[in-house]
Each structure stands twice: as structure tokens, then as C-alpha cells.
View 1 (tube, helix red, strand yellow):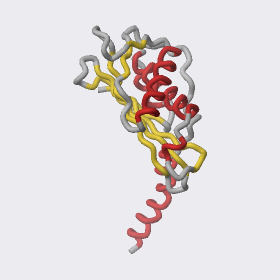
View 2 (view 1 turned 120 degrees about the vertical axis):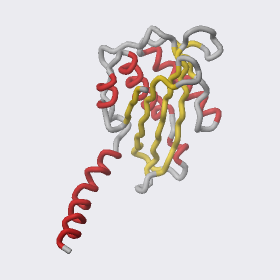
View 3 (view 1 turned 90 degrees about the horizontal axis):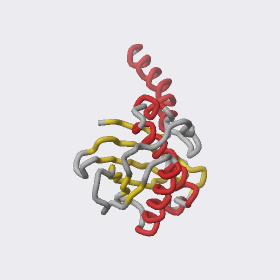
Length: 174
């Protein structure tokens, strides 16, 4: 009986720590300083998840933010050695009613085998009956900045810094 009580007490004590790791804000990411993009051009493949008009707008913002970070951006149809970036974006409503977004950027050198993955999630401070309604230009730009900062870190070979920058986003190299 005492052992069961101790296990429950430990679970109750550790649960907030685990949940805290899942919480973040759109501004939690530290900005990239001194890291520039890869010499390899990026080709953004169609964004999956949002409605087509939002996907096109987000793809445009991704390209703008990539250029700011020193990446050359080319069309997916451009022949050559461009790093293809497939982006997945999802919206959700948290238990507290706030809208949140999760994303994954998969990169591929040959269009088939993933070479790197950048992923993250962030909650917005606004509540909405439909989470996609909260995906405005500001949210898109912040998501693009966080994910591309991590991609720049990975391109620079700094996998540890990319993975440790924030609980808002995570990266993995494969």
C-alpha cells in the first residue's frame, strides 16, 4: 500500500514537469545569430495541411524567410541538386481553447530519402472556434522563422543546437 502511494505521489509530482515540456509560445525560439543557409538551394514542395490558399501563402512566407537566412530558393521543377523541402502543417485546439500549430519540414536530396527533419509545435495566445482561423500572417511567419532557424543550424552541422534551442521545436537528423 505504501509503495503504491509513493508511486502515485511521484507520478503526480512529475506530471507537471512533463506537461511543461509540451507548452510553448510562438516567441519561445531564440533567433539564429551567425548561422547562414546552406550552399545547396532549397525547393519547397507544396505545403500539406491547410486549405490551398493558406498553403500557398505559407509557402511564399517560407521562401521569404529562407532567403533572409541565406538560402537560395528555387522552384521544385528546377533540375539540379536542390534540397527538396516537404512541409506538413496542422492546427489544433488545446484543452484551454487556444489554437496551436504543429509542423514538420522533411528535407530530401533525391526526392525519396529523408535527410533531415525539423519539427515543432507552438500555441497561440488566442482562442478560436476553428484553429485554422488563427493562422494569420504573423503566425505563419513565426512558424517559418522557427523551423528555418533550425534548418539553418542543421545545415551548419550544429545538430545539438538545433535540437536544444527550444521546447517549441525539435529537430532530428537521419
